[in-house]
Length: 438
Image 1 (cartoon, rainbow, N blue to C red):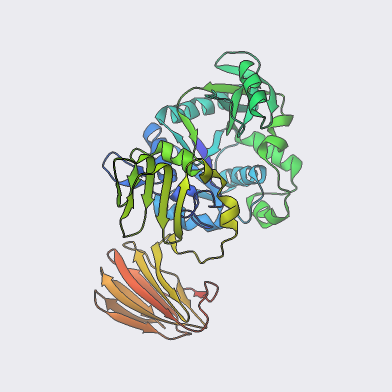
Image 2: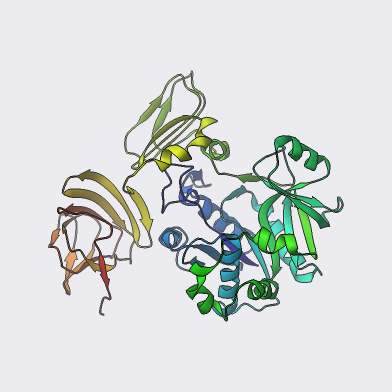
């Protein structure tokens, strides 16, 4: 199975755990069988591999998410990087060109496209395999998955099938309706459009060439910022006459708000939390190293991270975006391809950060113009390179870098460092990267 996962999101609806570079799919909030925590993207990737160990997975995403993807899924997963956001049709066209020109996928092979963040069980991925097989064998150019509705939702578009069989021709599409119209559509046998579909690779490449002037993947990547923003539905699906839909009636949840996310949690809390007996339907997600105690609360979500604290009625939590848009703050936690960092303190002229590096990984070799840095190793072993000079480091060692020094740190084991930044101008933009000579 060739599967393309669309990974977007601005990170606002699940503030304070999500931010501009940590979208909802990277929040580790679901318990695994062994008691560990995993994120939405880790859960989906694991489920795909459980159903089809040979599945070729490509994630279509922005540059800002690449580090988080590598951090959580490793280096083996394919990534089609969008230079900027241009909606789903350009993203899928770029991913199709990537599959053909970079990964060597044949134009006759089927490709399945779906969002990266649904809450589903393994039967969903069994259905995706079947969807891909249909796309391979059917006369239809496009095969959609239609989700059996559980209520008349105003959040989704609807697919009206021409019949009630498991696989039917598509009669028409309907935009996001009012609740009353949604109920009427469902009475006609309508299905939710969950943005899941399959096609033969050559079909989408031909449609892309009809709508965009480009030669190959590299050419499309180079001119990507000139493309019009348009969804795949508008650009392709609604103009295709040979199109079918396959029904899916298993578990499928679109986890886009705190309310829907807490419904999918296996327990009432992640992190350190306590409730008294008067609490009803209360969920806590706590990433801070301090306890949270809840008393007498009902239908409330509490979320705490280095970026902030949210206390909200669950229904009201879906209206958080306008408030988050008013915030101007530095990102306090992020996952990188080499590990992660957490800001412990920010003050005028200084910043204190806890850095964790995975074994065998290193930071970029870099320098700063306007700040000095001091690293104190608190656990693990590794090496620093400062202006070309390599030095072994262990817990208790202190390394000082003046502004202008080129430096990096390499983890031989998992390595934790307290980094203190000192200077009149401390900015994420004050950074120059260099190649590190062997």
